[in-house]
Amino acid sequence: MSEFLSDSDFERFRTLIYDESGIHFSESNRTILESRLKERLRAAKLETVGAYYDHVKRNQEELKVLLDAVTTNLTRFFRNAAHWQTFENYVVPQIVERRKAGSDRTVRIWSAGCSTGEEPYTIAMELLELLPTGFKFEILASDLSLKSLMVGQQGYYPDTRINGIPDRFLAKYFDRKDAGYQVKDSVKQYIKFDYHNLKNDSGKRNLDVVFCRNVLIYFDEPAQKAVIDRFWDAMGPTSYLFIGHSESLFGMETQFKFLKTDWACIYGKGVTS
Image (cartoon, helix red, strand yellow):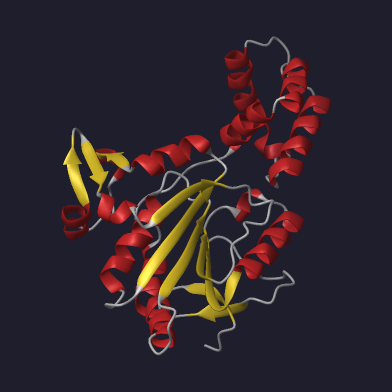
């Protein structure tokens, strides 16, 4: 047992975090929680874990900071090439084909758990390349981490973070700035960054695509099921769900249909193939 974090304190904090966010800390992740709590105690100038727990229970803003601290924000541009090939060659053409005869030509996408913004910016660049004249799009980018959202909103990435961006995209959609690149306003205008806890209903409806990749792995099965059900409610009658390549809805009671494309496996709502 850790001298810093007793079994009872560990149980209290992991219950609090789970109840507030759906993020599940197993015994194997205990050291991660412990290191994050040590950081927060120093920042709050508190001596004991118990005092910090009382502080969090009284202070909603500190609770948000704690939830931010325990999330993992690992991402990059064009992460998992097979997903982007599926998006380019299957999902977008399907949406365009269905919409071209109608009056609603706005494509609506949610990047849930967007971290520092690489995913929603990748989506925006793809749609600027792929959508025909007369089509529009809007992207909601949400996360539990306020720090990550601020990075995404700023849209500035150092040289070490731009790996994976094709040279033509870099030249077309970014400006060179200092030791990195700034996303152009012509791309940023399509994305709304917003704080959102996946434990709650987003209020969104009729979305065409939801990306929620490498987020469900932090939830236990009941929390995963609740999130997936909320995605179903938020999505349009014919729509697509991308989850992480190591994640699956197999064994979950859900109405989503498993879709095996030539490039990657995704999930669909109201689609036949």
